[in-house]
Length: 308
Image 1 (cartoon, rainbow, N blue to C red):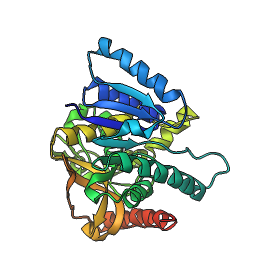
Image 2 (image 1 turned 135 degrees about the vertical axis):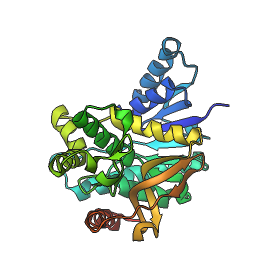
Image 3 (image 1 turned 180 degrees about the horizontal axis):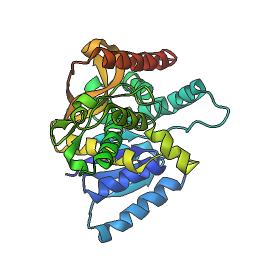
């Protein structure tokens, strides 16, 4: 029997995630949204692409959470983008209500699912999903680090004119401008980039990584990134469905690791069939620790405002 993935939110990120899942034949896909007709139309369009692309996986668009029953993974992309005049706190509370409602529904219909949160502010929304669902922490995780690391890898590869496959990178901390890229652990064919690039170039790459999402928004004017975020979600699902025990940077609920208790923070984890199998602890330099602490404090400040 094929795996089943529900993608909540039929916008750019959700629909592109559904397409990537089907193209790779990873699962049957249910695309759900509150807007009538949008998920149904996109679901049918994806289904009709099957004969051309060569996949037999099912695609269904719906407004009814009953259709999501028995999902193995649920990807939550639903949420509002920040609008002019809206404060960060306004956005936080509006998306809290959306993610809370969505999580209640998916937890009711798929109590054994693994939840992958994409909605922003990501770390706070992952915290919301954990508390509302009542799921164990290893089955609720956030997509951020895979995306941020992919951006860092892209910029390193372009800088050094090497294949992206030769580049590995890790990013710690919350998703946003307080993230902590780690050049010491970022390598080209096993060689740390600190041995290959001058500090000023590394600092420029780190800065561009931190502002990677904002750079795309600046170009698009309306909307935000969706190709790289959807690819990042699917890499996580692939690791789970194939029980790869793959080390990826994800937002995980820390319970003492890195000296952090009860918060979602981006760290390297081992992903397998159960979800998060292990959190990998990395020894930080004093400078890195300062950046990480600042990032954690930023997440803690957001979570403190949630009406949980």
